[in-house]
Amino acid sequence: MDLATLKAFKPSEYQEAADGYQATSDTASAAKDTVENGISAAIRNKLEGKAAEAALRELKELGKNFHYVQTECALVSTALNAFAFDMAAAKRKLEAALADAEAAGCTVGADGSVTFPAGGKEVDGKVPEGGTVRASTSPTDPTASALERQAVNMHPNPNFGKAVEFADRIGDALKEATDTDAKWAPKLRALKADDDLVVSNRDWTDVKSDAGGVANGADAYARSLPKPPKDGDPAEVAEWWSNLSDEQKAAYISLHPDSIGAMDGLPATVRDEANRVVLAESRAEYQDKLAAWMKKEPEHYRPYISPITGLEVKGAVVETEEWKEWNKKRKDLEGRITGMDLIQGRFDRTGTDGLPEAYLIGFSPEGKGHDGKVILANGNPDTADHTGIYVPGTGTLLQDIGKDLGRGETLWHESNRFAQGQTVSTITWFDYDAPLQARPFEKGGGLFPEAMFDKYAEKGGPGLSHYLDGNLEARRSVSGNTDLGHITLTGHSYGTTLIGDAAKSRVWPEGALPVDDVIAVGSPGMQAKHAADLGIPQGHMWAEKGGGNDAAVRIGGKYLAGLGDDWTIPTDPEFGANIMESDAEDHGAFWDEGSTSLRNQALVIAGQYDKVTLE
Image 1 (cartoon, rainbow, N blue to C red):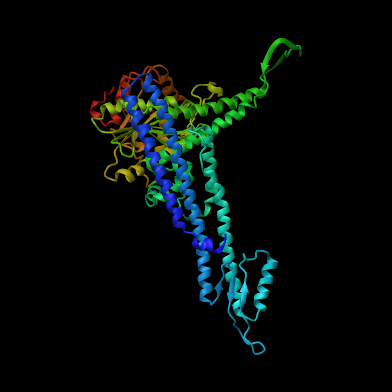
Image 2: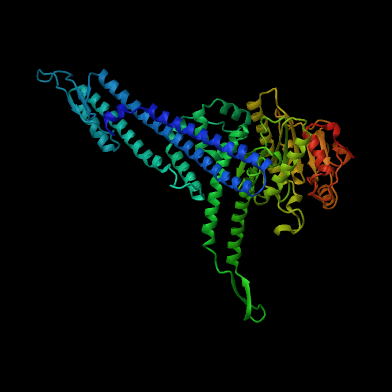
């Protein structure tokens, strides 16, 4: 880049262009929300038939298009701001060098060369003449640098050394601008969509690649942004976010959607925006992984060799070990894709029977312990009058998350029925390495199933505690300190053990878990003898038990696993819980529609304590 071009460069023009792209991104985001949570939701809530189904299919594709435009335009905006930032830095260096040269009596030519005046002590009766030094980058080679210093020291005109310095600085600024242009030109050219009207897996794969390219190029711009708190304290995170400009917030979401989506203390709307990008990118990534893996299928069968004769048995075959390993990974990839589709399925049910919009507050295809991570809210918890948070138990996996998302929806419908016009949000919280086996030898386990041990709850408890603090801080940032709402934390089975460890993990000055009520459903124990030991106020601990295999879970947790304290579980009178009536016929029936067990949970969530029926 030449001197004239850099002098004439106006970073503000690119920043204005960035603002334009961000405005387009915001418009696309609003259009997506209107399509998905407005028009489509209204159709699901009021219309049926083939025409409605066809319209919903078209609207779903339109929503995808708007989401893609939203994400890519935000990325273009960040890239333009980063380019302008880098170029502005180079221009400032050039302007400083030009000003210093002028102050020293030097003249800078159009090609960046520096002409210096005569000066210094007379030599043979003459003042050393002036001259011109060409613009160049500062020598980095030690030999060249030494020669330059030697030339400056030997030159009789002291202005020569100044001119060399100015020329080097000018050359450095021009090179920096040239390198910046060369770095960003291909990145900006790459930020364009395919010439079609279909947003495919390939498009979302490209989005992730584009984001990586922009992030790598925008390192200087990223360093200029205020950094989030290192320890992730939710209160500090909330304050950090509130102090960012709109441009800075947009940059963080476009450059690091996975980090922003996982940050406790941020508003649900912010985390949802980031996590939906992560979901779309992950869905495309895992589909590509599966397609590549399917091409590597090894031989399925081999002839069976009799262990007695050592001879091949005619017509008999067995599966090869190579195929078994291949198939195991195939199922894993397919399972994660299924889990992501189940989350998308929840988005697609918005409006059905009045179901509110969904917020993806946390997501990872892997999560902790390779089980995946899903935190999904029905309705906005930052503004709801009543929020119910549901923690699932043993055997929870991303690929089966539909069951637990369904329980969250059922709780919303039933709680909303009793909310007396107030707003309700229900959250399915799955962000821990859940034990897989509840019975001996189940799912490839051994004699002692994983659910017998507290280590999974002990490891995951602090994460739940941290999330709850973040939920409170997000609420404060959106609704204020005077409107903290009513929060109910519900655990099922091993999820109740996790809640107990979450409460016990808190240290001074954190205090008790920031919730108003706790419900233990089918609990094998909460690592405490009394509700008060967990900081739960009297009258605000609730418990339910069921028939069938639920008794085995509770008895096993109490006497075999020792997940309570002193062989005490929440449904024991001495624990201090309100034991609610329940007609659940087994361990998984507490959310059956029309059941007493579901009704009582919903009444607690809605704050209608006087209507709860107790044993």
